[in-house]
Length: 194
Image (tube, rainbow, N blue to C red; front, side, top):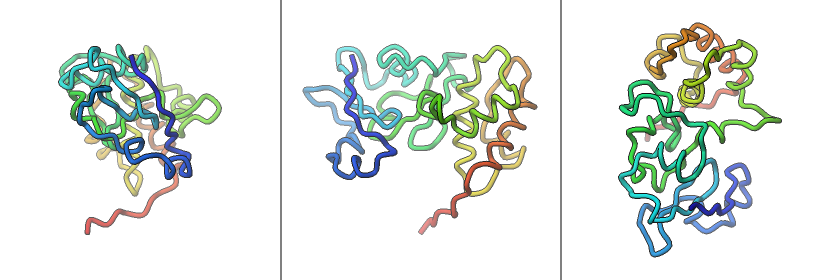
């Protein structure tokens, strides 16, 4: 059983007023259980329903009922289960819950909205990317991580960054859609490593 504590990531004023635990949950278990920040909301996890070693995929799908993230292979090879953990693409089927505690998690449900799709989602529609659709949420999340870089990725950089399998063979349309979305996204200045 999960209980949502509203902390919209896009509402900076609310986030500034929120207690530190609302924006950066700690991985420590308490009498109340564990908390996980998913798609901008801090969710309390019932300790009877989850174990810190449980794969993040099953926490998302079975405990939180966020079923957009798909099970594909169960060994991290296909990428159907890709989500973002602290902005980095992670295979949720092999990522234990405790590796995500205290870090923001973004699933396909948090990528865009019906009335305001993410540029990747819009490009996916325009380029008619999906066929069977099973790999699409993982591909979109891996692409979102790749496009967070300061400059648009090349095809070679996309191959290296994504590595998801599409058994239907729509990868040519995937690349075209990612490049179209990259052209629409504002570029960020490179981060200083100092």
